[in-house]
Length: 116
Length: 113
Image (cartoon, rainbow over all chains, first blue to last red; front, top):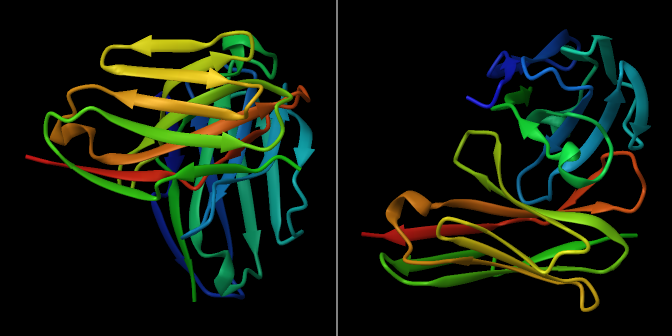
């Protein structure tokens, strides 16, 4: 248990559905991240939040909409997804964005998303 | 644009062997480099973090080295065990202070009893 919890663990949705992924961290960290892990591709950073403000949007399509209501929670709202969006979505948190040991990122177990 | 490459993509060894996993990156302007472990269907676990000013870090049977000038890092696993079977990911943190990690595709290791 890393202190980062993601729900649901598995999600199947149609292309017209709207769903949300949830991430919660119990580590008192200030930064949170969404990553996408597709088969045969490196892990890709999607969004970074620091102190509830978005500091990085890595050219992610607008059908993915993040929300960070407080420093402990991060959501990824999904709508009108495509089959190629099927992947493992990982959430991570770190103490801060800074260097040294403060930006060691702790990952959740991920949500396995299948878009039909 | 920073790119991270890991070789080999897959590795199978008998238990007890010492082994080396390789990671290379194209831009030497990095903050630090991290090695992660990922078990099937699970998230990532941080194994070692090497700051750009450091040459190596050790944790138990793991030793990671960093040669920033040549854009290379290695993860050395001593006396491998079946429980070491997993995918090992290398990631670099660039010089921008946004927490952005650039990952390699990973090396999938199988240690046979």
